[in-house]
Length: 129
Image 1 (tube, rainbow, N blue to C red):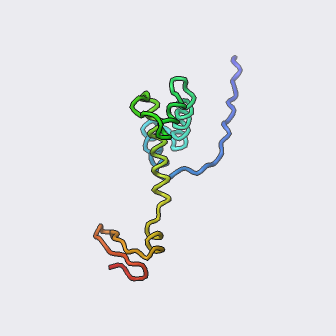
Image 2 (tube, rainbow, N blue to C red):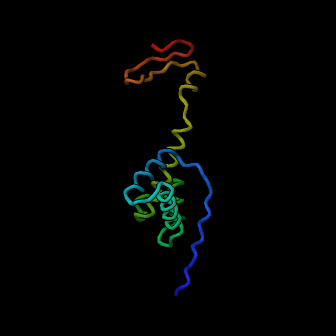
Image 3 (cartoon, rainbow, N blue to C red):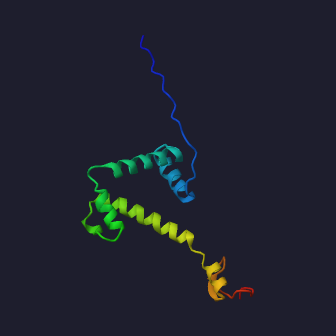
C-alpha cells in the first residue's frame, strides 16, 4: 500500500483587484473551468515568467517605456510586456483626471452628456442646461 502524499494548502493573501480585470478573469476562467482567483493567479505567474525570461530583455523594454527605444525592434513577447505597461499607465492617468473639478475651480464652462447621451452645457454655479 502506497503512502499518500499530503498536499499542503497554499497560503493566500487577500488583495484588491481592479473590477474590470476581475470581470475579465471571471470570463476567461469560466472557459477553462477556473475561478476568477485561479485565473488571476495564472496571469500573474505568466507575467512573472515573462519578466524573468532570458528571451526577454528588460533593458530593452525599459528603454522603450522611457521613450529611448524602438517598440518595433522588440520581440513579440517584449512587445506584449510593453503593451501591458502602457495600458496600465493609461488607465492610471485616466483615473486621475477630474475635469469637472478642474473646470469648476477655474470657473470654466464645459459640455457633458446626460444619461441618454444628449449634450448638456455645464457652467460652474449654475444648473445644467
